[in-house]
Length: 146
Image (cartoon, rainbow, N blue to C red; front, side, top):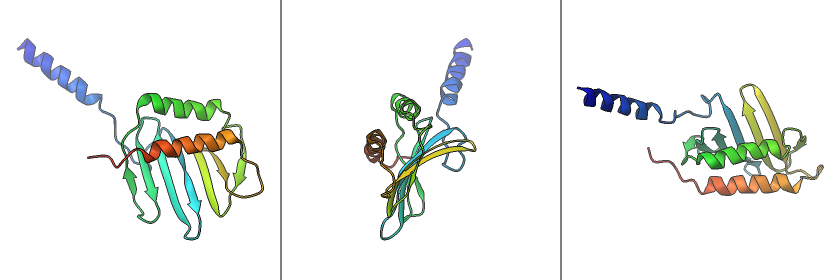
């Protein structure tokens, strides 16, 4: 009887550790939204990265948000800490253009966004590098298998 109880408790513990799956609309923690919009067709191409590692992709041509493979905790922690440590919360960059790139950190009602693509403001190289690294990481994550 003791073995059965122990096994049931272990299985219950393992199942409860599974990551909760959210959607961009239901997630209430910290989320990094990044992507681009505009061009001739006005297309939006963006990613949603949650602090729990979930990643979604949205393209306005398909109108649905697609779940991608999750990112590992180490990468997610690095991405989120870099946003803070590189001073992005203190930066002000709002220069949209025909093709606009953006980074937006959201936490509840709080949002901080950097937008560039116009010709009025110079973009710090670290912002471009951070954005390019994010896009490179996101593009390696294929659609998640359900």
